[in-house]
Image (cartoon, rainbow, N blue to C red):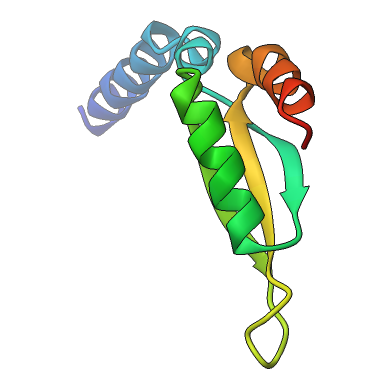
Length: 95
């Protein structure tokens, strides 16, 4: 009888894993790509405002900071589906 319970449990786990389609789930998730490396928070915020004004969502990520708090380096990230449009906005606005 104990073997039957294990077999049922294994069958349930396998059925659940087959029902879950990772590829379908992955297609609903956005991948964020680095669009620009800004050498200051001011430049990063200016680019963020420009992108958002064009309806392009973006994220800023601090990736480097000097000991005195200056010379911050920010990564400007955009969703993969917006990357081409964001690149055009970048060029059009002289970044």
